[in-house]
Image 1: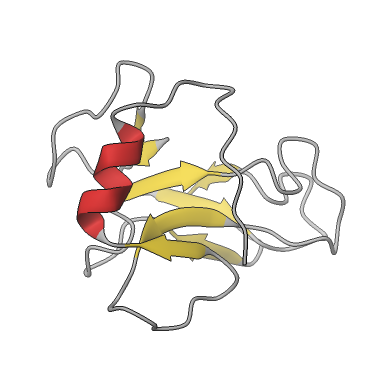
Image 2: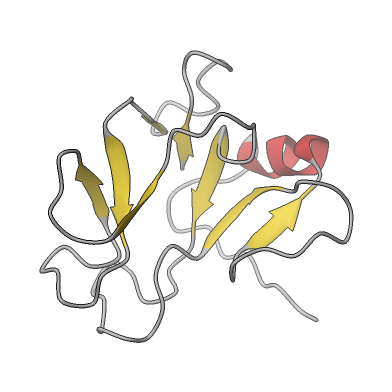
Length: 116
């Protein structure tokens, strides 16, 4: 679990803060593909510190992580939605209150099954 400490309190004692230079590598050529990296980073990546609140709290899924296989997908997170029904780039998005409810109850290794 990752969170923005400048926007919310630590949701669990094991949650990691998202800092200004935190990125997520999405380049299959990168040895750190589908993992947390820091700027500057010479490969394609996604910024975790966003102006909008979508990534204020991120649940990192085990899809192709931690032992990423290039091309199987990266940055598959559970995060806050833009609005109900709005698409994501492959993630799972929830209402803020639902995301925070889950975050308060999970621990490393918790299984969350997502159906269609």
